Image 1 (cartoon, rainbow, N blue to C red):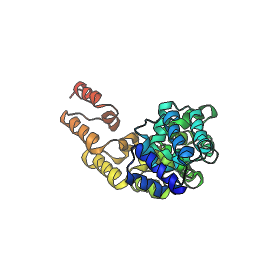
Image 2: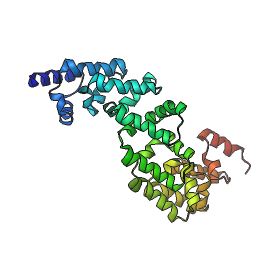
Image 3: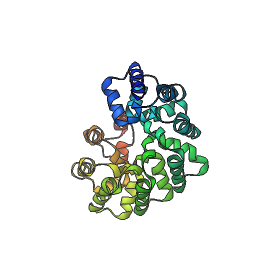
Image 4: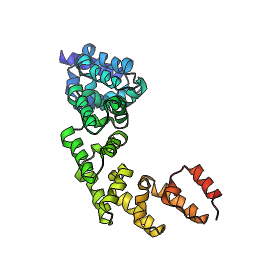
Length: 296
């Protein structure tokens, strides 16, 4: 019977456009796929993704290849409750399909064991009840894989680390809502090295806090490949004191080669002197206009 189920499932997946090599890898990742009943699980779950979740049919093969568990989980025990919970957070049909396409494993998690505790954690970070669905929707749209992380061993240690730097409740909430990927990073391997580097430059605790609160993703930037070259450019090329970056932390979000160096070169060519914020906080068109209108 198992062989018959396996053959029918393989034939079904082939008809949907999956190649033999992909199907083999799917079965290796999810052995239950070799014994699951086609008409009881695989076909209904596939139709659910297409008709209910509204994932475009051309994308479903990629989605199930990345997460073959979607074809063997209970439709009404697992998939449906999570989809309904996500809709309850205010996801539009298009947004829901996008989030699940990006991170299909989100449907494999339990609403009670994963989604609800995550909502409770957000409340603990200062997100008000009335804003919770909207903010949770924003977080999952940006970083759907946050659901897969352990709250106690990954998310909360990161929150406590950010608090130790001095972030206020409001600043912490902004990190969670607008830069949720930061909460998923390992403190010692991904975040603390940046803090240590900033302090090694002589920045005070207050200045470090200003930089991180002003541009939280600075914590996730590579010290060697991003921060060091940018600080060197400010001091050695622009001739500014390194403290100048504290006045405009967003500086660390711009590409050194494509934006910072290009605009500085044009600024000097035109004979102007602008602060980092004046030079960078506008699009290319407005920057060009600014260069034309400033007196030499």
